[in-house]
Each structure stands twice: as C-alpha cells, then as structure tokens.
Image 1: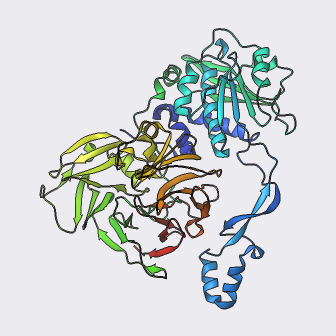
Image 2 (image 1 turned 90 degrees about the vertical axis):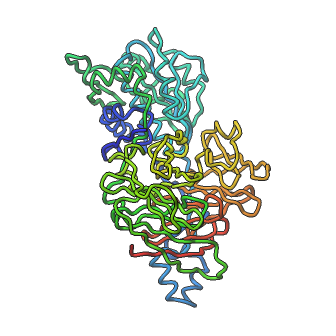
Length: 577
C-alpha cells in the first residue's frame, strides 16, 4: 500500500481528506481551506465556557486557591518536594466547572442535487461536506446529510469514506423548490445547526429562510445558513472558478483541474490505495528521532527511538513490589541507520533498521538461525522514502515472531520475513489499527487471542487485551465480552478516545485520553478514575497489551510508568540518549 505525504498547510486535514485519493486531496486542498475560513467566521468550533458552576475533577493547572488541601500540607511539611512538584507540574488542583447554554445539536446539511449544481457546484459541496464534518467532529456532534426533495428523516450519515459515495449518487432530475426546503427544515430539533448548499437561484427564492444563525429560543426553523455557488469563470477545458456566497460575503474560489475534477465527479477518486501520511512539523517533534515509547509485544519492555537515528532504547518495566517509585535503568542499543520496528520475545530483542537503502536485522541475545547476511530490499516491505520519513516521528512498529518468521505491519500491509530474508505479503492491516499516532496493535483483530465474533468484527471501533474484546459504534458506548465469556457495558460522555483495555482482577477497564483536556481516565462499569499522574502529555499514553501497565511522557524526555487501574507510578524513566 502506497503512502502519500500532504503539504504542511493541509496537515490538520489529514483525517478528513483520507476519504479521497491523494491526488484529489491535493487538488481540493485550496478550496477546502478557503471554505473553512469562510465557515469558521460564522460557526466557531468551540463555544464560550459559560458561567462558573462549582468544581469537578482534578487537573494539573490552576490558581493557588484551587490547590488541594493535601498539597498545602505538603508545602508545610516538605517544602522542597512541594517546589519540585510545582516545577514538574505534578501539583493537583480542583478543576472548575462551567455552565453553558450553548446548543450542541447535530449538524444538518441539506444539499441541492438538481441539474444546476452539477459539475462545479458538486465540487464545492464536496469541499463543504469535508469542512462541516470536521467541525462537527471537533465539537463532538454528528453530521447528517439530507437531499432536498427526499422524504423527511432520510439521512446520509457516517464517516466521509462511507458518506461521500452515497452523496455523489444522490442526483435529482428536477430543481428543488423553496417549499421542499421548508418541509426539510420544519421537522428538525431546536438545537440543530442547519446548512443549505444550493444555487443562487434557490437561495434568492427563500425570503422566509434568512441566512442567519439559529437563535437559542427559536431553534433552526426557518434559519439555515445558505451557501450558494455558481460558476464565475470559464477556461478552454471548462469552469475554472466559482463564486461562493455566504450571508453578505462573496468569494471567488479556484476549482481543481478539469481531469481530476471529472474523475472526482465520477466517484473514481474516492477509492484510495493507502493512507495519507503527514509528518509532524519540525518544531513540534523535538530532537530527531524522538517518539513516544511503546509496548510492541507482550513483554514488559518499553521501546523507543533515541535522540540519534540509530539508537534503540529498551526499558524493562515489569510490575515492582517496591513501595516507592523506582528509577529504572534504560539499555541503549546502537544500530546503523533508522530503526523501523522492534520487539522483545523471550530473552531476545529483534529489530529492523534501514541503512544505506537496505533493511537489516538486529538481534540482542542468543542468535537465531538463518542467512548470515540478513538483508531485505525496502521495496518488498513497502518502505519508500515517504513512509520512512513518517515512521521516524512515530512510535516503533511491532516486530512479532511467528514460528521462525518475523511479522511487521508496514504501510497498511502485514509483511512476513523468513529467516533467509524472503518477504511475503501476509494480508492487510485492519483500517481501525491505523491511528493518527501510528499503528495501534490493540485495535488489530488478527492479534486477538480468539476468533472475533460477527458483531465484534464489523463494529466501527474495536479494542482488545488478553482475550477480552470491547466494541462500539459511536466510540462512547462500549460493549465488552471478557475472556471468561461475561458481558459488560461501559460508557462515558467526555469527548475522548479509547487508548487501551486492561483488567482490574476480573473486571474490564477502558483507558481513555481526551485531546482537549489531555486527561487520562480509567472507565469501569460503576465508576471513573482520573489518572492525573499520567495526564497532560501532548500524545496519548501507551497501554500494555496484556498487563495493567500504562506509560506517559510528561514532561518531554521523562516517562512515567505505573498501574493503569490505580494510577500508582512504579517507574520513572529519564535518559540523555
């Protein structure tokens, strides 16, 4: 599977543009960005916090009067430790709560599928759907698309990859009428945010539907925002620019080139050969090669790249019986070139590293059989220059043993490497395992300890650990089947993503991370625990695939490892490597 890098200006759009081919994503990028700026001035992603409403939860920042009483006691009894925790941002504060009356309903997009919107109008609708879907997801709400003229309640929904083909197929032979728009708007909820994508002809014929924001009291009835589009300029090969009007603002925006535009309108550019990979900005990744540590196998060994390209750091973080936090020693392995994948199996540490256009095998511990000079052509692994650049800023890929062979997921495919270096394709990586921060092994169904059931296999979200499987359709209400065959139901309301699944004795526990607050929580059937000592990092924590271990890098360069069910820290890892 090939991988294509987006330019830095489109990096925030990697998720939304992943439903398109790389060529269309690049061609549509300028139109998407300009529309997002136009929409953003009228509909911000975040609302004002509202009025104070007491306290709720615990955070790592705040004013002095919000410090927990225990922290003031620590300041009196152990002032030096208090100052150390203050510098390392380990002090705990009461987090304020706010009461907001802002509406958080669905985003409803009504599209004109008539003849006047064919061609250029549909391209603007495509970009607008990506913009509105991304903004709805950022607010934690749902986006529904309705075709004007369809019966009320007929909605297109889902992620862009599922939504866009259905939208493209919705073509109507007649122009919609103002009465049909009124019927579509009449049955909506008061909290919904309504958008209408149409032509100036229909927009000007809606005097009862002003292009203004919905009021909190009156709801959306009669007040959708109208985005009207018509061709502004023509060239030898067709339309080159469109005039887009929203409220009293009108812009002239460029269209993609004719050849890619035609393929997009035929649906050919909705099928992709590989993920769109975006490297992190140079000023955001720190020293070269730094990436979040990761558990790649069932061994209790935390692996990461060092500051230098060929340094592989391995730390054994097995559960400790000490009552106090232990400072753990990290072993550095010196390899030539860029470390791609690694894994600890038994007493051996295996690694693959890219050096001078060749992939080499590294083994620490008792040597294994096979060719004396283990050399693999990077092309056989799908490892081109773009993929290698992206992997340099992400956690190490897992390197697993399968008999005498090695298994590694690269660029969306599992690759099997025989002892003599021969590479064979071993099937696709499940799309749920391709996360925004790299490969997520706890979402890969093929690594389950048992065969997945139909409901688990087809669910939109899936995580597993030690024979227990959790699945969900909306990412917030999860059904769990434990390794003992018992069923549980876990749920949360926060805008967070599940980053792991552990066990507290026999009970399953979901570990979540919120990208907004950077808080880490342990979700149980009957309670929620905030893991404050593992919160605050710029990236999600990593959770062990079988043990209740969690690791978080905060502040940068300092990793804490501990119990994912209690929040107790067992190890502190710091290295100048």
